[in-house]
Image (cartoon, rainbow, N blue to C red; front, side, top):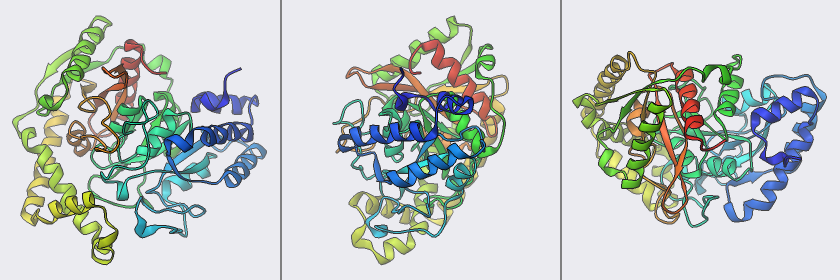
Amino acid sequence: MTDLHTLTAADAARRIEAGNLRSEVLTDAVLEQIEAREPKIEAYVYVDRDTSMDEARIRDREPARGPLHGVPVAVKDVFDTFDMPTAYGSPIYRNHQPPQDSAVVAMIREKGGVILGKTVTPEFATQHPPKTRNPHDLSRSPGGSSAGSAAAVAADMSPTAVGSQTTGSIIRPAAYCGVVGYKPSFHAINVGGMKPLAPSMDTVGILSRTVEDAMLLAATLWDTGPVDLDDAVRTAPRIAFCRTPQWDKAEDYMQAVIEEAVSRLSHAGATVEEVSLPPEFDALEDAVDTLVGFEMWRTLTFERGTYPGLLSPRLKELLAMGEARTGEDYRAALALAVICRAQFAEMMRGHDVIMTLPATGEAPLREESTGDPTFCKIWTVMYGASVTVPAAHGPNGLPLGIQVAAPYANDDKALVAAEWIRRTLGVGR
């Protein structure tokens, strides 16, 4: 019999709906996996077995509320929860208890999901390396800032998890941990009750074992019907392959993975055309840094002004860079982003997705960094959907991914193309 904690969210939901599995039994199996693996991986900051089990028992007694009914979900610790502490990864908010749930947590509960607990994030979803370890190699980082959510899903300590992305915090951890990362179109999932960092960039996202699972959680949050993925992937996607201005930052083996993928996908029936971004994109990564830094400095005014001694050196460094960005810099960055979004939408006519790298290579050593988000920044500021799926393994046996992106409100195209690519390459679930 399949170990219940390894079930995908979609498989678990189908069994619960058919009456072949109780949420109480599934939740207990996942909690046992957490107890077994959490001491080494440290993906969670808070788990309350009693509360989760009580919630699961309630789900078993009531009619199905939504497509994820009875399925456990982990939540990144930047989302408020009325019944669990929410510290935003910072000692400033140790033992902080919000009076209400964030919108995404409330919606998951309303639709029948079971909240397992809160997953680790670097302080305020920035870049200070957290305690969490990569399940594939405990000496390696799981990425950031959705470190705990990605590691929990990869270690079978949750079927799916909620995270957030400001520059690369969904896509990069998913690539490092060998799971699916889905950053929806900007604010497609409500950000209410999420600790803001850079409001013009902050986006709620999903970490999951499969693309189907990501779509299931998205359908739960959007109140839409599920997509027939098997039917959708029968049509090969039209792919624009883009090296981006950041190409030289990637390791040689990472470049080779995507170049080989281009060949394999073409032979499998996809239309793949190599494209170059307009020259305005050359300055876009710096524009993203300006947007995030300028907004972060202002968003964290209370914390930096009242508790400077409780900020990490890395966060202080980021804040100093943000303080140096002027209002003129900020307005210019906003204007450039608008221009590039329009150019991106235009160049994507005739293509379903653009395919590129999600990270520079394998996960770095844990104490060094959470990794470089360079291959995620420009797609985040495009405001469209980005999805990464497992694609290969690196020289140390660690997961490597491929990222696809689509213009705003073309999320289904990105998800279906990502699944077609994953199936064609034969990596992941």
